[in-house]
Image (cartoon, rainbow, N blue to C red):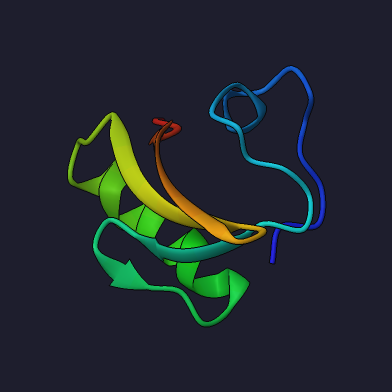
Length: 71
């Protein structure tokens, strides 16, 4: 579950809100916060600039393309 979102960050720009649930990232299911960190690390190592997340917000589900930090 998302606990906090930077209001000026890319997550907020993509409609991610506190209380949302990240269902999967880069096609991999999310069961713990470490799954998100690992998927972002793998995407960065692979040279990817964006990852696709499937997010449950209330009764709806949407996709968000999120930038991957590099460096």
